[in-house]
Every structure is written in C-alpha cells, then in structure tokens.
Length: 134
Image (cartoon, rainbow, N blue to C red; front, side, top):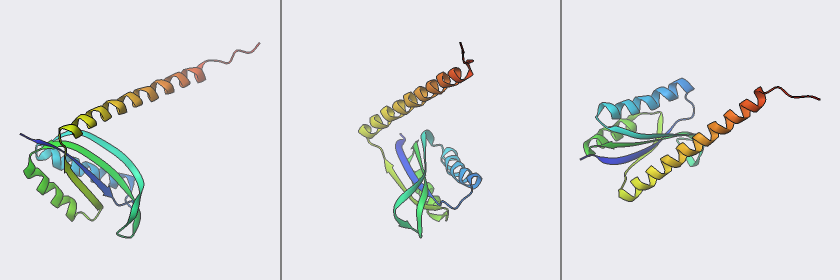
C-alpha cells in the first residue's frame, strides 16, 4: 500500500520562468512515471531563505504532495540531489493526522480561491455598468 509523502524543494532563483516551469514539470513527471499519484501541488513562489544556500539568499519554493511506494522516494531524492538547480529539498512521510490537516488545508485554499474569484466577478460587473449621471 502506498504511503503519502510531501516533498518541498527550493529551486535556484537565477532560472528563467520557462526553465523554472520545465524543472518543476520534470520532477512531477518523474513521480508520475514511477506510478506515484500526485495529490496536491503548491507553488509558494520566490521567497527569502533563512540563511544563504550556495551563496543565494532567495529561492523558488515548490511543494508536491503525493502517494507512492517507499522505493520511489530513494530514486526521486537521488535525482533531486544531483540537480544543480535544486538548492535544497525535504521529503517526509505524512501520518494520519497530517493527512487530515492537509485535506482541510486544501479545502480552505479552494474556498479562498472561489471567494477571490467571486469578488473579482462582482468588481468587473460594477466597472462594466455605465455610470448614471443626473
């Protein structure tokens, strides 16, 4: 039975947007090819690191939550370790309490996203209405 894992990795900030997306997609595809089920992906974006890593103070953070067999993790971490564009990574196995928390967090993110979209729609409708002058 597959376990549920989360991997957080920091990509070097000097990559172009296209190269960054390509790097992230490469690792998601590696997991999919190893028969891992991607549960969630979170793009934290460019953030300041707590301390310099390879003389860089910023990094692009990305989180992948997935279900996979334990053998997949060793291969995945080896590939992350060999890639010069990956500054740091951390993989950990989620226990039942963490899984419940992440399910709740995903639902809250969906609700926030839906609320934000509704607010944008309301604002767009207000802007589209002609101004009535007396």
